[in-house]
Length: 328
Ligand code: 8YV
Image (tube, rainbow, N blue to C red; front, side, top):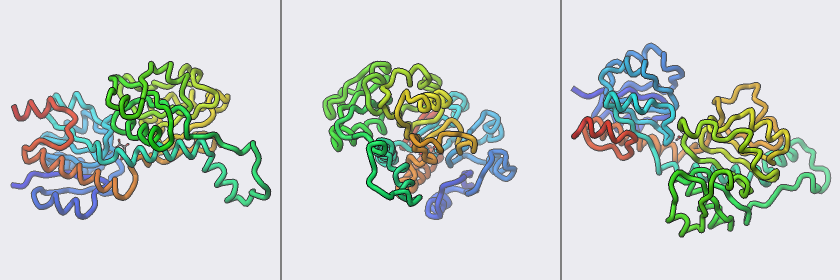
């Protein structure tokens, strides 16, 4: 009998066809709630779960007694109770590498857009307000040669740093749990305590994963340490930031601008002031959202789940311990 996979969102026909060769697949393209009765019913029989953007709770796992593996179409795994999955010997797989360069491009788009006021000034032209040469009040600030402070220097952080150092001649500072000697050699990056980095950087770009330690890593004290001319860019997770503190810092001119791809609550609540602030560029969590990259991510998830259910080691495995529990 074929093993069963419950799949939701983001898979294309060709992904489903690959899976259907070896597995019985129940697909929920528009799933909007984990409580959807048909989805829950499929889950009760499922050996594998593949999809993106659904918070997985222990209660949901209780309803999935045959589950062997989950393949998330994301690199971030903050939506998953990792310890609980490991306790149940359920493999968790993610999609690193294939989205690194695209997400770094998004980070750099925000660096450029905030510093050069691209969105604000494009809106000015769109409104028909460009009647005379613009003056200094509308000038931006340089990107090239300015100091780039990377908070998190993993795969995506390194790709942003590479763009800054090699493409824009930016000195790179970084704060990271472990030192990165190879990037120090390659890019001349220098490691700093977070507080020192905040005081020295012209751009502070956040790429850390969301964990208990990084939740609200940025609050009033951190924004107060930054230069009044500094620009804050977040392509990690919204909850790394105390959002009211960020709004207050932007309003008070404690920092110059913010480029944000991620928010504490997504989609952004209608009453959030952030998208309407002139010194904010807010994007709808598009870090990895290109046609090519989303396809590659879905393919990686398909490969991960297929391997896991065949008893082969998935390409990108988050909880090593569950693998050992199943196969040692
Ligand atoms: C995902 C992301 O597509 O990979 C991640 O961690 O943030 C995005 O690329 C999104 O989180 C899935 O919902």
